[in-house]
Image (cartoon, rainbow, N blue to C red; front, side):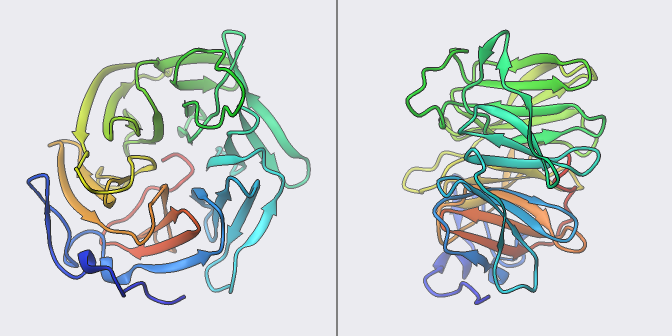
Length: 307
């Protein structure tokens, strides 16, 4: 669809934020290529690339949509969706969902619909799973803040980051100290788990063991900037190990090894999440309130199924 150029002054020039060099169109994110891929929704979230098409949620619309590049509009994949938020895929390519409405992580299969994977921790109902990734061995990792609780009271009593082994039904609590854990992603070698905390606008890292336990919790970067709207929310990683996440001001690219901000690109509406896509995984799809955007990059992603 049409290019998003008018009114985006920050896409036209390099700028400095928090002492770190931010964007111009020689950066990793090619800001001048930003365009609308889909529009007309209430609150988009949970983008995940399924090989040739993008799946995403409209949470208040209680539906999951699918966008095939080249088609004029996205189509409803299924509804109702239990207010699905984040999505990924399991090792068989089946859709995994983090659901606000049900307070569960589920699997959706076209022939049979939704199947609950996990909905409780130590006998207590989860809050409202927000985002989810699957490791290459099948381990499911997800965040569980209270955003979708509605009138329900939190039974677990905290916002959690969890790992769940579906085969053994073993649940591991990775962290219960983040205020609002949200997006999460794995490093290319799957040895590091990254989690964004929306309440503090920070990105955290953990060393992830084979059994799903984690250690070495550390702050990667604080992305708070006075006067910029937007939140640390969705998180992705490219094949070189750089971290991409929604942030105050739009989309941020971070070098986790140095804890430095490499680029900050503005998006016309507040970004909620992002996913690699396109034939060679060099495009980023960005959910942002009523819209879904697409931007070209000078990087290569790792795929939505595990990152």
